[in-house]
Image (cartoon, rainbow over all chains, first blue to last red; front, side):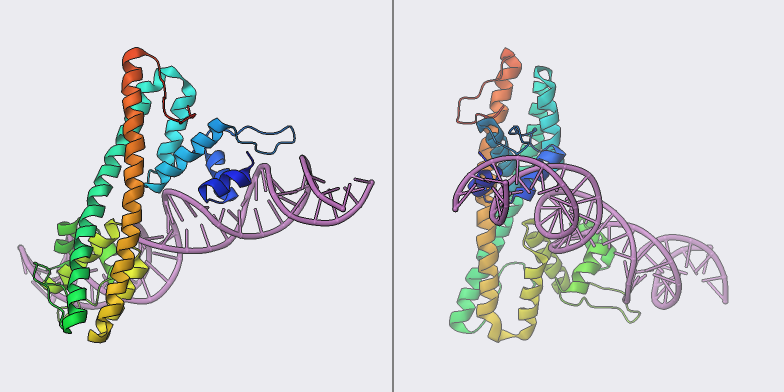
Length: 130
Length: 130
DNA sequence: CTACAACTTGGAGTTAACTCTAAGTCAAGC
DNA sequence: GCTTGACTTAGAGTTAACTCCAAGTTGTAG
């Protein structure tokens, strides 16, 4: 699979993919004799994983650490698990914040829908705001 | 309320608060005769709102737009609602991504827990990865 | 065999959102 | 009244994560 195909598959730019490989977010990608990237299924799976993790805000630094441990072999199972567990905790915290913000937005939008009908904007919660 | 008290309440730095006021993420804060910030309850409510929105990744630019509309008065109810609805959509998309990443992490961590017990790491999903 | 688009690299540039610095002002305690 | 620490501003600097650029190479279509 060429870099272009992988990029289209995940809607990212070649620059991002090359950057991921350069800094170690994904392991080194297979090449043709000429030196052009030719992604194997395994390479693509690493890309998919990286993009999924990044989309949830897992820092590049943490992904690099995971790949580094992976390349060290089977003695790093526990260390790798710990990295993943840390990422999971961060994501759970973020999920909670997102949910709180959703609640606030839903409340405010419902108040605005009211205001658009009645011409008057009112807040009944402890939001002294606005 | 002093800037320090507000910062302690929300665990942020004075620099961040001053930055928020400067660029318009929150409206201008009440001052003492000497020119020192003295946050009213309303000011604090704006801060709380900004921090909640930012914690869910709502861009500073969008908060500025909301404050700008707010200061234009009652003719902007609809426009403000639209800004909030856009923020809500983005957050929903992010929530979905976070959930997908959680699923992936839970799966991987369970595989590692297995591997730590048995000494062998196996993947059964379509993750050719690793 | 020749275009020419798509690839390569190393390194510089960009962006959003802070974060820090310098130089000065305010105010509480002695 | 003086010291001392927290406050003020304008503007420069930082960080993470890309994103772009220049100069050169590869590979496919005619």
